[in-house]
Image 1 (tube, chains in turn blue, yellow, cyan):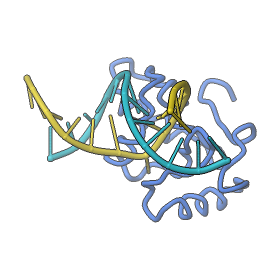
Image 2: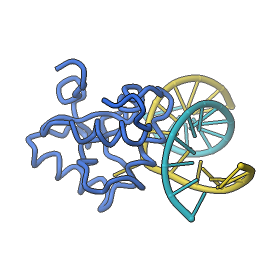
Image 3: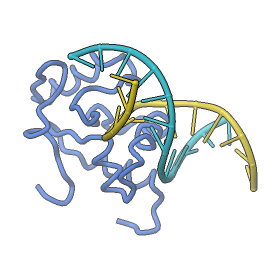
Length: 104
DNA sequence: CGAGTGACCGCAA
DNA sequence: ATTGCGGCCACTC
């Protein structure tokens, strides 16, 4: 990964690396990009950044869906279910589906 | 360049 | 258990 890459570039790159059937939390992504408390930024990048990235694989700390996701939480849920991700109480089991770039 | 804003997170009433 | 508030960082306008 380019050390000179901006936070946004790292986030987009990282999101793009999330394999199907796996999810990441905003805080996890922010921490992996060097700013553990910049979870909001990840959301901001999701809104302004590259729309071609699998943002549906990005969930909040509760494993739930993002409020501002186009189409609502329901659309994101369907997108994840299409990748064999099981939802429980409108949230995924992070113990099973949480993916980390360093460890696999 | 400055100010506003947010697809969050955590704690407090 | 639910609701409200603040903080924090980077992005956009």
